[in-house]
Length: 504
Image 1 (cartoon, rainbow, N blue to C red):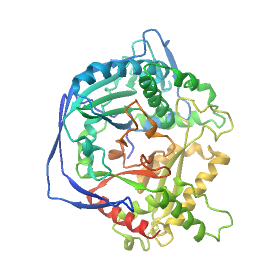
Image 2: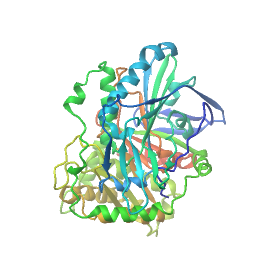
Image 3: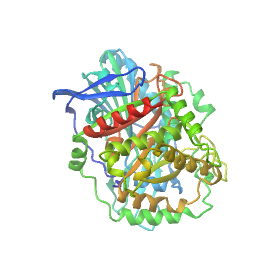
Image 4: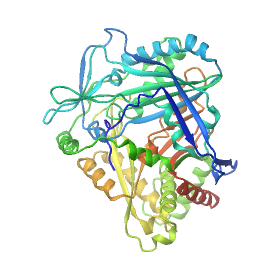
């Protein structure tokens, strides 16, 4: 199912109560995976109280009115639901100290950061066809910033173990609702933030933003710039050495992709419906999320296993950390969600795996590393069910994912004219696993002066069904894999995942 980036409801809630069932989690130090078992149903209440609601804008008259066109890299993300990420930090400070000594600097540094990353304070303008959607910043545009307090268990929220998916949702702000002008033009805010203090324990920074404004690399450039300015008490050295580039002219549409993507966008926009909040509630009601850590030793063993057992190929397989991690998780997921291997004996149904790849150094024209916007190739691979879960399923998954990654080096935009059509067709077929995040974004390097984040998670996977990838906080070369599954599927996945690691 494809949902829209403007299909979000604003919830005018000042105090949020959340009831969750608790699942027992036991960590195994050797495998770093999980042993899951359900305890007797218990209730845990999270109370989030809003202290302030602010609008943070760039400094007055620091950014001129600016209209930014959408490139062919941006247009596909008009179809994407908002991105949501949370960062948890240790911050053992009482509420009064936070409000008086820390919060003013957070706001001030955010304002200066938005001066340089002003598209996040802009609006997405979607006029009727045939006019093109674009981003528009005008004096007075701002980002909503909610300041809240929570008396809940901070340490429970930063564990890897399985827990009710709804635990994280009170800590990410909803985007303000879209509005419709008199010319029937939709005006859609692009970012919303929430900072939640756990008195004398920690702090959570939750951010929601529309993917059409920026990809992961651009977003993390923004968040690290904000952290640097706050940490250094206003020193702009970090930004001076790597300022974001907003010149959309660096993106050359050599293959005529923009009109193709716009035509698909207009078709879909005319039939979209607002997101059903009751349906979302039902999706979340029986799901748990967990983080699985694939250690460096496991990853190296996976690579060696591929190299030693796939010697008949004429060309060596591409066995990067990303490839072997995705292959293993894909196989384990399909096995866990479809009733076991026995159901796949003669299953010729195709199962798809989708990931994106940064094109800043993979296309014919130069794109600076600090380019702000989207610059991603959309990639799909597939295998029949019987192949994917068979004895050689992992190796076949490595091959198809690795081959697709290798193809990017010689032609990242080959077949790009079908990106949106493929996404629509494959999504409707089912059996699609998608990836959010990347282990190359340096998420745990986002330091506001409180040290590295204790935990960072991608919240929207609870609804989208994607898996999230990030570098591991505690071990160089290891990978964190975030999953949001039904309770039954999570138990099944854990058993299959543990068994797979024991075979290494």
